[in-house]
View: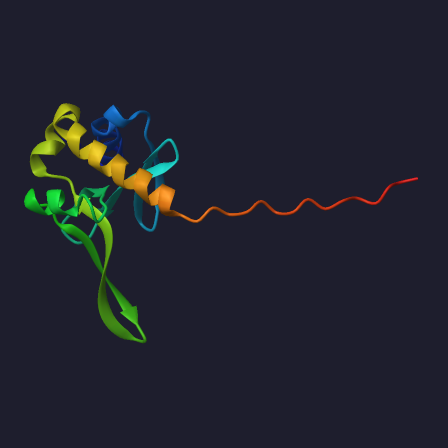
Length: 136
């Protein structure tokens, strides 16, 4: 397992290599991991050390929960009051953190959820082209 922050990020990308090349980018005090422009995972410390959190969907949620994975839940405030919020990411199963081979089925579930989320997003219409007045 990784020994430093940068090592852990690199290790998580290696674990997800079955999906193709992964890109890790800093975001919100943690890291986002994507492949082919699809967000498949997060690395964040929610109070018990850095963890790899894999994307889930309503369809795949039962598999994550059956494996004992924890939902990505964080404290926030609304109108000055503390509230708990969650995102559709689940902690990677402990045994899947041992190798890319063990992670592969979970990585595929995360990719499936990412593809579904991407397909569900409304498409933005391209901005209308403006005509330039004729010069001369």
